[in-house]
Figure (cartoon, rainbow, N blue to C red):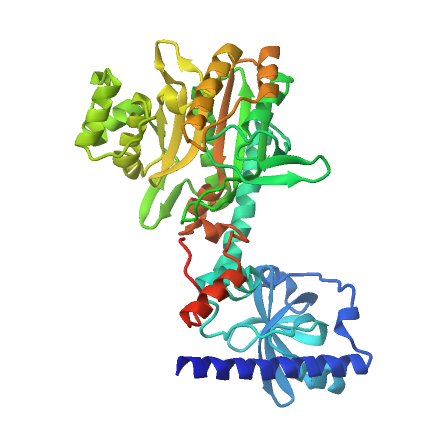
Amino acid sequence: MATQQNNGQEQDLNHLRKVRREKLAELQANGQNPFEITKYDVTHHSQEVKDNFDELEGKHVVLAGRMMSKRVMGKASFCNVQDLQGNIQSYVARDSIGEEEYKAFKKMDIGDIVGLEGEVFKTKTGEISIHASAVKLLSKSLQILPEKFHGLTNTDTRYRQRYVDLIMNPEVKDTFIKRSKILTAIRKYLGNEGFMEVETPMLVQNAGGAAARPFETHFNALNEDLKLRISLELYLKRLIVGGLERVYEIGRVFRNEGLDTRHNPEFTLMELYQAYTDYHGMMDLTENLYRFVAQEVLGTTQIVYKGIEMDLGKPFERITMVDAVKKYAGVDWNEVETLEQARELAKAHNLEFEERHKKGDILNLFFEEYVEEHLLQPTFVMDHPVEISPLTKKKPENPDYVERFEFFMNGWEMANAYSELNDPIDQRERFKAQEELLAQGDDEANTTDEDFMNALEIGMPPTGGIGFGIDRMCMLLTGAEAIRDVLLFPTMKSLGDVNKKNDVNNTASEAPEKN
């Protein structure tokens, strides 16, 4: 029964699409091809007109946008036009625009791009509107928008056809406008702090700087295998060596991993490096940056995400990983002296570990299992074990740990920062340990980057560095529930593969993806 209904709906849509093409053919035959129009001079947007009604009442304005509704009532009609800022009603009368123009207007379809000019006025019901003196078809829509009442609600279709999602769901457009403002605010803050924005390679021979599996590709011109970067770190540190004391980059990185509500294989990372400071300096910068961005974009430092209130205006909590595990798991790692003791504790707490895991790795397993979910308020978790931090300076008073912190909000890791390792001898030993892990089957381990080692041997000053997850920051500041909701075009399974699976299952619904 459902299949018959779907077939009937598709036949109706095919008929409507056929009618639209016939209308276009008629326009073209009459020398009125809308696709030949190259420009239209717009003077105002919808919200601008509404916000400045007292000043614009009775004035002539020119707008353009997509026709979202139309009510034809004999010699006068109403339509609603949607632009970047929102939508506005227009009163279209035959006597105001002319008889032929009115006939042309009546043939326009929902979804058409139109130019609209006329005087600003307010209807008897108090709605700010445009009394049209001209309506011009600027582009013909040959497809059918989703029915207005039900809108576009299918999540998978929304992600695949983001252009339709932006048209039908105003809150989606608001999210991405807000995302743009977040990035602008970040750049404004860092510019005021003397940071320089740079760009570094995406195609690299050695994908280092993080624990992640890279994507691999082949460069035909050099007949050489390359990787897509998983981090920005090693190139930015080269620039610190070169004397650019404060640098940052906002860019896509690529990790060949799974999909879920907080992970997409390509995502936006910001890394910054500042000479002559340490991880404490990075904590201060993070606090100030988050406060500035929230105030700039939201007008407040208090945010609410899924009912959880987070106050960016208060000093962020600072706690060591050892103290956090003691607080939430009841395990005092200061009393754990050997790897065997660590393994016994893991077994007692039903934590799975691998043979290659050392004492510090097991501490991190405790942290992930028992602590992360509790870190709802802005929190810096400091002093990580050296085993999981191959690019970080050791703590002089306790070389089992490093000067590193992760920044958490809402139970999510939001940033990762170090007092950067600048000892080339120590760094080579860390890379060697990573290569041993790689040989043992850890496909996320780093390999030695000889050019980066050469840079360190030239000499890098004491440096603080940090990586920010921009997409998660956008999720918290926009209220988005999944990372795909803040990515304009998230990674999706190809429709061909989906349709093949549907054919096998004899179902019209698309195969689900882990989100």
